[in-house]
Image (tube, rainbow, N blue to C red):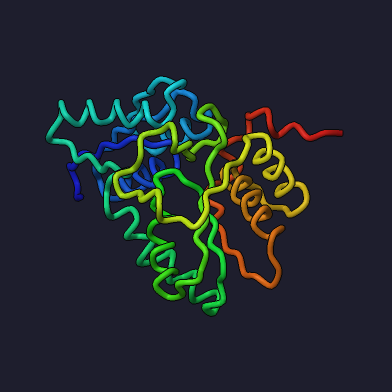
Length: 241
């Protein structure tokens, strides 16, 4: 998409920031539908990058944003609807880039890949590549344990709109995590490891530790997809004295 183009999509924040960053350098407009519950930091970043924001119902989460974006797309056919939850380029990017990078950096020794379920592109693309290299590599997804949760970017798929390219039979296992567990691990990443990350990264660590607790002599790889500065005003950062 070049100068003068118009891009539309729903987002929980991360992909929207990528869209807005590209828009500034390539000269196209971006309209993003994002849940009103998104952190103030995410909203501020998107506005600073020049994105036009449409806030959807906070109680409907990412599904509500998806529905609103589709309604806008139906009424504005001149806008390019990126539709990240159904766009094949989503999982293909991970098949062509993330998967090969992990395989190369682990020297082919990865035994378990653990990743969150949001758009599910990371699971489907990276998992497909790794399974082609080693059919015994375990592909494990994780999701919130409830439809009502505080893990931005993740979906509770049993109660959510399923991404078009998601295959529920693909993963070897899907782990369910509580918001509180993810918050605790996010705090520990900051205070004990010096890694200032977001809640989906805390959830990734929680899921990986659960897998590791059941195994020996294994190589587990996960993805930390979010940074902590987007959540500075969230109450979960209150450390116990």
